[in-house]
Every structure is written in structure tokens, then in C-alpha cells.
Image 1 (cartoon, rainbow, N blue to C red):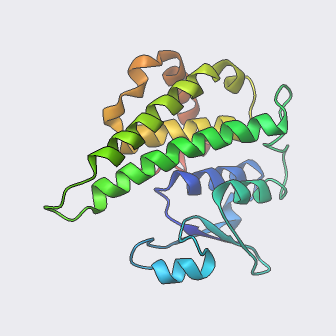
Image 2: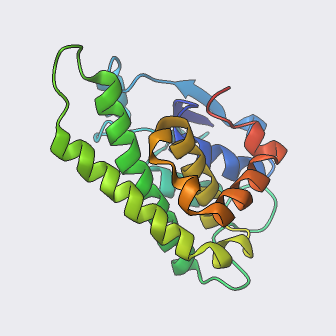
Length: 202
């Protein structure tokens, strides 16, 4: 199988972590694609022009990341990440959607900052709106921490990748200052080999 995207993408990272959980991480080939320079190629696979896109061994194309994670969860060994002992599947998917919403805002803000041509003004309104969405989203995540850290699910994986991406791309938010318990838990997870292997800074 091929996963089109970038290893700096938290959405790609989530997919890789699902594959690793089920024991076939080495069988999932990441094919780098530039969302700006190769937009036509990307849109031929996903009309929305977004990463990641999964190409199965049968040539079927699957997007977006939440759907890809759902699909990968049906393969390989190990227990499903969308079923928790104390969490209903809909609850896991709701918290995954929360994380993905935070990531959408952070990625949009990051892309505007990185890709605005020098000398051109960034939109203060959008930059602030995205920052507000991230901040309120992290607050909502913190309110679910006890539930998350006692259930190893797709939601707990997404919590770690989301908060680590904020450290990576939006350190000025300083989310750790207000949520020390969540910061300690995230650092414990990031020390695990599976998270080290998918660190976007590598």
C-alpha cells in the first residue's frame, strides 16, 4: 500500500501509527507529494487536493485521514483502535474529530505563515480565528484527559499527535503552561518507540 503525503503531516502520522499498531507499518510506503507544486497530481487522487491519500494494493484510493485510519484498523493484527473498554465507538470518533479540527486550524495557520510571499500581509482575522479555534480545542481536549489516558484508542493516539504538532508548528501557543497534567502524559507517550519513529522533526 502507498500513503501519499508528507511525514511532517500529523494526519499522515496518525495513519502510520494505526499501521504500526496492527503490525504492518513496514508495508505502508509513504510517497512524498507537494500539495502546492503537485496539486494537479494530488487532485487526480483526491479532488479536494488534500493529504493523505491511501492507495490500496487493489488500486483503490481512500481519503481523508479519518477514513484511512478506519480502513487500516480493519487490517493486520491487534485489537481495534475504534473500540474501547469504556468508550463507545462514536465517542472515540467524536474525540478524533476534535483533534482533527484543532489540527485543521493549526495547519491552515502554519501554511499561511510559511507560504505567504515575502512582503505580502497575512490575514490577521484568519490568523486570530485559527489561533482561537486551536486554543478552545485544546481546552476541550484537556477536559477529556482522564477518559483518554485510561483507554488506548484512536482518540488517545490523536491526542498525542495533535499536541506534539502544536509543539512543532505553533510553540507560541504555549499550551503546556496551562495544562501541566496533559503535558506530562503526552511526554510519557512521546517517549514510546512508536511515537519516536514517527516524529515529524526526523
